[in-house]
Amino acid sequence: MKNKIVLEHKRLNNMFDSMSFFIKNSQNSNVTKCSINLMAKQLKEHFEFEENIILKYDSMNYLYLKNKHDELIKELYAITNKDSFYEFLKLMEIHDKDVDIPLFKNIINKN
Image (cartoon, rainbow, N blue to C red; front, side, top):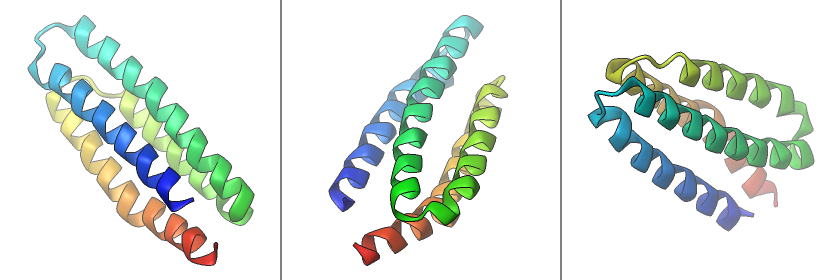
């Protein structure tokens, strides 16, 4: 279980690093928009992965996690420039620290 979660986060971080380059360096709004759409697709897949684990091992926290994920997707689509992208990355860090780590640490420790 732990390995799957770690590998999934590495995959997501690698994708974010790649897309971050385009968002940070592009002057073309279409490139930024395409990058955000690709990030949203990947992030939704990642969130679905996490939500399925929570549903299986900690169903009482499923709606909490789902709502937090939905909020992040809305924030991602609200990105209009580099500054708002940096703000989104900060939100993702806060989410990991305050939501994901405690929830998944609890699951890993139980299993």
